[in-house]
Length: 486
Ligand SMILES: Cc1cc2nc3c(=O)[nH]c(=O)nc-3n(C[C@H](O)[C@H](O)[C@H](O)COP(=O)(O)OP(=O)(O)OC[C@H]3O[C@@H](n4cnc5c(N)ncnc54)[C@H](O)[C@@H]3O)c2cc1C
Ligand code: FES
Ligand code: FES
Image 1 (cartoon, protein in one colour):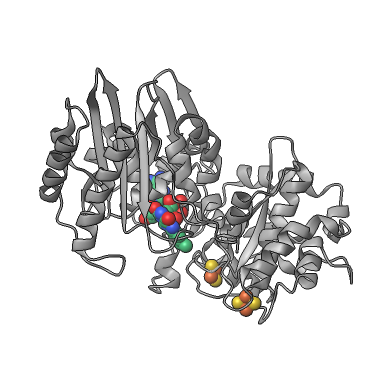
Image 2: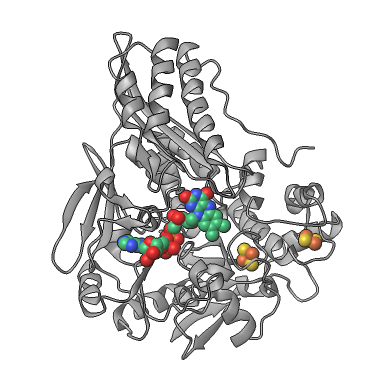
């Protein structure tokens, strides 16, 4: 049974198939059709809803998610807010009032999703008011496409929300809502329900389930997995959800670095990356959309083993390790040994990824990550280069050059690395590295770029690295167009 609150009211939904999405639950089972389906693949944001879970202080924190690719069973013990739950009778929520006044809607198809993204921004602002920078607006709205209005009026609506009366939704009057949701979560944790969608709470239970149901698929944020049902129409009828396994949700700091639980979402990782790996943090701004980053995990990105996944090249450049676990025990291996061939990994039949280890960067380590994609927001890489190195006595040391989009797996460029290791970063050295790079990879052609484009682009990224080092980082301007500033 999925037991949750919808716009303040308790809902108990029985017999919901494992592969039902939130969108389907709302529209088909509950008759709530305000939330729209545009693409059913997490790209357009028309289906955006807000999922509330209790924070450390007990208050509910609302995060935007794509209803079309979020499993309905993940609502268990949550408060779901949809576009139907914002207005207070005839009084519109500030997100809605601002959209009306700024003419932020034409056909209206994208509007419920945009309003829900603005609702999460409004909630954040209410909790911790902060200036609405260009970057913040882009982050909030980057996962919402509008085909007809244009973003200017929508941006104006976001900027003017605070000028409208702060109409609270009716459910916000209930002083017990947060504690009721918390109690429900606790009760669900104790009940350990079975069925075709199970959500173990600890490692021991996960190991046991893996032993009992070796065929079951694992699901974390579902931002890759769910496309198998919405796009390929595959049945996902036996699922083990790892999102609530306590050990997979931990970030453990050691003197050598951080063990990041496989089910930790990108949104939770942002502060750690901002502090210790700014180049990785910068990449996150270009990684999918806020809706996806709120649900997607590092573990899912690595397990998915896509050659164009964004985090694996960065993790390879940083010498990350991976901890695999299962009924037969735990083992650890360098991430480079995890990817075997296209979508083939070293994971054994009953194993899962428990955590990923990120070594603490030394003071002299440099890291640069450059992602090339057709669109700046919410797009998958054509080529991604992640480069780590140190400069010691005028020569390059510990050079790690990892690429995505250049081979069947994310991979380091062994030849190019050898050409740079122990050498001064001169034009000649880099020319040798670029020649070696041509032998390191035989990329393929696809919709994101031809093989030739990829070779040239990867080589150019090395040249960019040289120029950056040569000019002492003074030309290190990142490419940031202001999409909403016209
Ligand atoms: C619109 C959109 C945009 C995207 N943009 C990007 C992008 O810019 N860059 C990028 O790299 N990716 C992108 N993705 C892909 C996706 O968001 C990431 O790969 C994400 O990290 C997957 O994590 P998840 O938790 O959602 O994994 P899930 O979808 O839950 O799982 C992915 C796979 O990993 C397996 N799995 C999950 N957890 C474990 C575990 N602990 N152990 C073993 N196996 C496990 C699942 O069984 C499944 O096969 C995008 C996806 C969408 C829909
Ligand atoms: S319907 Fe397009 S993101 Fe969900
Ligand atoms: S108003 Fe038509 S898609 Fe946005």
